[in-house]
Length: 575
Image (tube, rainbow, N blue to C red; front, side):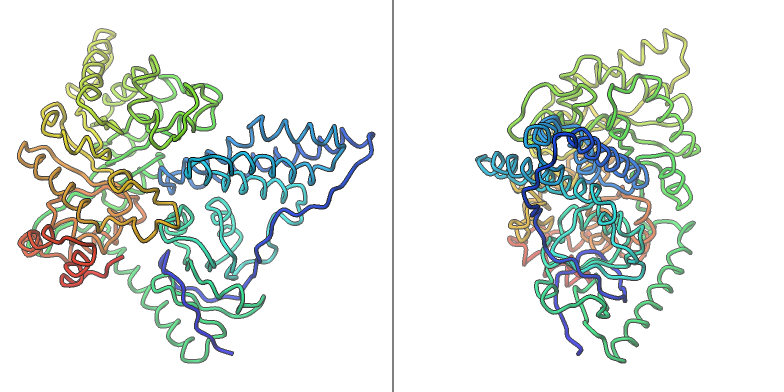
């Protein structure tokens, strides 16, 4: 019988398919003892499962490199690092030997021990990290029973589940899943960001789905509206086919924009940069007509390594991206990684109660002797092959940018003395993502050549909340008066000194946000290549003069509701 189930729109797109149910489960394994002579074989079985999961995580990261946002990249990397955690692995080995227990039961006991430690923590952020442990435990359990590690025959299916991890979501798409419906989850979660990157329709918060849907039922889902139709009728099928036909037509129209300018109706050119992690990303950006690389993330060179990448490794990676852009500027961001995410590289400098507020970004680069010097040498050497800029993350005070500026000058003098071919000038810019940097910007604007607003962290730090925390979902929004006013002030200060400003982050990739961002005064956006054509299309439908004239009313809004009314009045659907 036909039923309508409502959820929350998370990742755009429509899909029709058979429901594949996965009911919530806990790692409930009965206490199982093994014989003494079987201990070594059981430990070997467990280590084989660890090796299998480690290989799966490495393959997954390589396949998704470039599609991952910084947050997702760190999540996937963290899950991989947990597989080397002695607290987790050695504890399980010990339980297997002393029990002697089966690997399954030892896995359950160790999970319960670690959970008890996390539950006793006062810090909510750290308590929430038990989810990362659970994701790895579940993957290890699946690897111990290989026949359970993947859903067989899921091609054309829509997965219906309580919740889903980002890495699992990507893996299921490769197996043919065409959409996902979750009873929980948030449109701001890492899984949602992953689904958008993969263009996989996702509806979250459909609380009735687990009760109403059965294996084999036919579902139609719309990730743009949050609508889930169980056992659709003829009218539903016609409507779905019409939406799919429209989507194909829209894609054909978008493809025509590959060589068209990013120009508003009244003739203003807006610069569209691309975010990238690999040479392949750069090639895609070039093919889609990006002005250049506005954010090349160097973190992938540091993750999953047993030692720091030397100057030559870094130089070759940067040089290859510069060559791929054939003369278009490449902006390379210095290491933006927390010390908690790179322990295998030897970057951990001590325990941190809250890594999100700890030694990360430029703080880590300056604290670790030689780290920034090596990276700057590699970047400047790459400037001999094409235009390069240096972007510094997590700056919070003038002293940090002064230190980087001084070191950059020293490095350039060294390389010239060595006879290296380098650019006469390598522009230096800073991310504006820490509120203090926005406040004191007038004091150091003269020290930088360009700015990049990191909207993801700026919103998070400005509103003092974790955007991945589902209980705070209603509070996390770029449509907050404080966020818009801070961004507008940054743009105003930069324009007065003729310093260009680029916006990076999730909101830059949202076509619905384009008119609002242009109204605030932005003229440059940087986003993943997969979203370039959609954003270009939105720009070409905007009248910049009309939007700028309406900006004072936008900035006078005192509430999110007031901003949403402005958005609605200018023909944009609030996200």
